[in-house]
Image 1 (cartoon, helix red, strand yellow):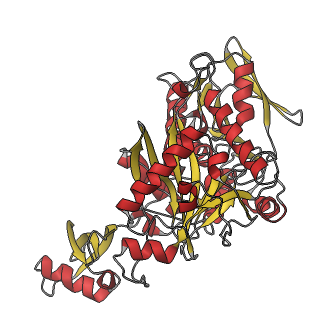
Image 2 (cartoon, rainbow, N blue to C red):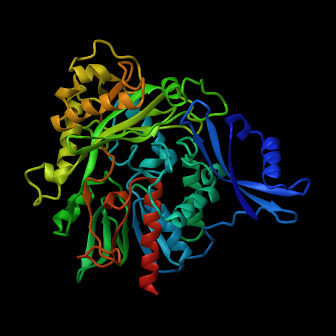
Length: 514
């Protein structure tokens, strides 16, 4: 086997006979038999002659393209030591799968519903502005990523762990393209089935799932975990807990604080979700070329420094939709998602400003300073929208000029828009930086700065505003057997990094128990 890389046009990248001929020519293989597989694929759109960067592994003669082995084995753990896992998002599910591979039994407690049942609650928030506190875009099987895009980007440098997570998705039904594409994406339409397949594997191995099971208390004895109580009164005796509740489980932060266990305020980011037409983003990124079947819907990544703080694009969704992601009745929260084909007419992205605990006078005494700020902005947006799940919105240039938009077009945000001057809704430390950032982004992406772009407020659940500390052995410094994990504990920022942290916690538990 040898590896080869070269560039081709987008049309050539989808032409198997052409690729085979080029590989044979590049490696001087003549008429020798060979097989090949994609290793990496990315778009190079730095100039008008758009290219696809290709990396292949080539197998000569009788060598066969190796089959991808299952990374998650079947092991009967029904009689093994139970490991409690609170939360069935990517951190919790991947922790459960790794727990099984280490011969232990996962017992999962999820406050929300299974993926199929969640859909009815998502429909209610979209159509009727009714927020189910335990079943919404943030809570439920699969976590926030299940119905808010399924992007698999990560900045993690641990390529082995990243590949294990991606291969696990493939084992349970994801397209193998996610192992190849530089920006892998499953899609909200496909991810729920993959999550169901993972759950079924966990159950077949003897693990347990408990839905509609919000944890209301964590018991300890001699400063070690001894069990949990659920909101409905059920109790479970457990001495090991992976706490993977996600960035929006504020009641868990309150519980930990009430018990006197250490918490820390953590930086996060807050801003707006901006929607352009996808055709515009395509024309900008592809130098005027009309996108066709040979190119994906174009994305963008923007970052600048304004008044000493980073302002950047977050969770960019080509061909996507903006969703209402509130977890309480008196708040408005937005996020974005894309189907697998990314074929909707709009492109959206969070544009957010860094927030630090030092921004607030209560720092460093109050671990909730960033969370309280987050809550206040979300509530102000709810009030500005008429105390509904409609979103306060404004055209981009109108926002820069401080002018309330006279007329707003229909956007992908289903509950609807309310025209406001967002400068009156967002705190000045956010709005002033956003205005300057949009001007800068308009210089970096000619055409981005347009009054046809609509700002939706607020994009606020970028990451947890609170960190649950842990020692080198990944346990809470004051509570033995409690393993804070994933986004909600402050150790991840997306599906893949959360999955990796879940795996990491499960490995450490197995190590400590053997």
